[in-house]
Image (cartoon, rainbow, N blue to C red; front, side, top):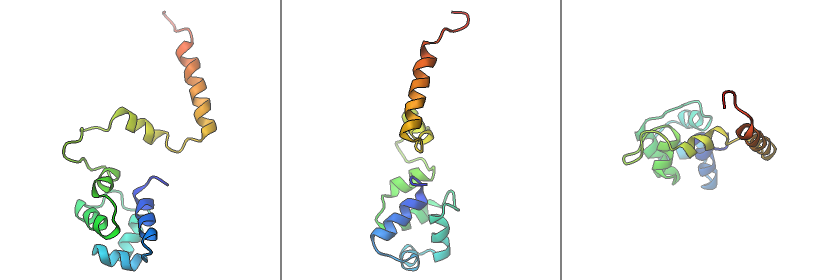
Length: 115
């Protein structure tokens, strides 16, 4: 899952050359919990834990909050339509995208019943 919070945490830790134990200690959490976070086993850690991880790994707190589904002050209640589409099609290959575009072009021009 390249766009997951777990992969982001793991990359940030690797870039800083930190072991799981050292990064966990810096964030004041257990190494086992950090491993679960990196493995995406924890779906929505508390904002407090996200803040500690942000500081320990130099990852923007707001990004961690968004990735785990928390709404930030001043942001709309629901994600923008484009954000939903991007999330739904994040793992589509170029070939699949081309096929979907071709299908959509056909779908929009087909005769409709009752028209």
